[in-house]
Length: 110
Figure 1 (cartoon, helix red, strand yellow):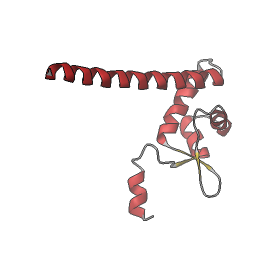
Figure 2 (cartoon, rainbow, N blue to C red):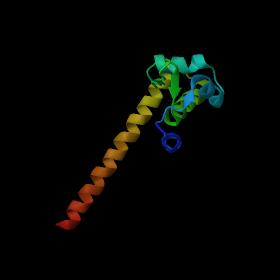
Figure 3 (cartoon, rainbow, N blue to C red):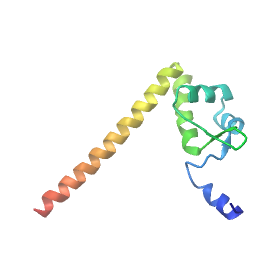
């Protein structure tokens, strides 16, 4: 991979650019919190060739939401479940919107 390829990937929300230490620092939390999110299967960091956890910006946003809930007194397991349900709801709403648009386009064409 060339340097140009690497720089282009920095705009990719799914590119695992952050080490566990850097991710924890950015979130103001501990590496053990990030490990707990992994154990709860909320996020699954990719592993470097050396076996170290690497996090993407998308995963950091999810972890930040979990931290927000935990900071407000929600147990970590419940916070993870809430985030999963929020994500499922958002996806269902997106699909419903697509169906509505398709249905309205179909009725207009009749």
